[in-house]
Image (cartoon, rainbow, N blue to C red; front, side, top):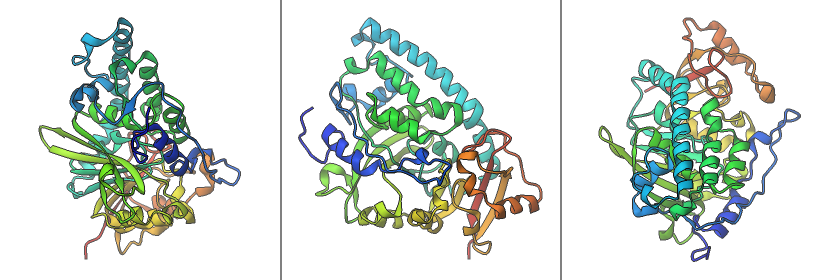
Length: 394
């Protein structure tokens, strides 16, 4: 593919450069011995087809439903028999996968949210650092928000420009990339890196389209965006220099009207953020947020994730997290109303270093802790914990 704009994240050469600079923290390469994260230096492969942030057929609404296995009506007349069979199988299996995800996680979270987050400030920005492309959980925890911001290591990438390039392999790879979120309710970072950098997916964009569409929304527009060194967020083509690449996805439903989800490809270590003053300024300039943190590899227990930890604590009016998020001792009881759910026990062996004795004591001392009937983070149903921190008003 000819490179016409060296800053274009949809261009392969640009995305290779982006991967070298952004995908630097291998979260699940953190081994038990020392739990030290090794940086990654992974470049995207050269695509076998034209790839861009552009809707095949010209309409994002129909393209997203095609990619999510919901409808092939806009393209069926142009498909080869092999593509028709592959898409049909993908749609059938995706229907089953989505039903499983809803039954095991999303529908249960929906019931819990209605009973426990009813007073949350619904119109605040919904913020999901360390979330990767997991739009399904964010939309379920905070369904009334108008703006969603997600941060992940993985590049935005692109989608095939021509319908002929949506091959049986492409759909098989897309379903494989979603397998961990269906099985466990979250994306496994090491698997995600492999799935979006070593296959034809070329980034998280198709996963975001799939999950937002499957959640019942119609996608109306997708625009590559960036954060400038001055902290300005705008379409990347309008910025003289881009510090952090991302994508803006507009979607709607009859009840809420138009809403926007912005995903940014970003390494959240202090060392990386120190070289991105505009991005840091953007994060610190966020309005009040309702924040979700889950399956965060206990990164904010470490001193070199202080910038994002402080940002979450300063911006959140409501924070929903399990124990892999911000350590319990950071929550001053005079500033936060803390509500505990489920049960707390030792972290899984990979993260056993990050046991929180003060959190265990808090669970032991709390009266009437409600159980959770869904898994959360690295814990399955019946073993998971959840904390809701609500900032006290003065």
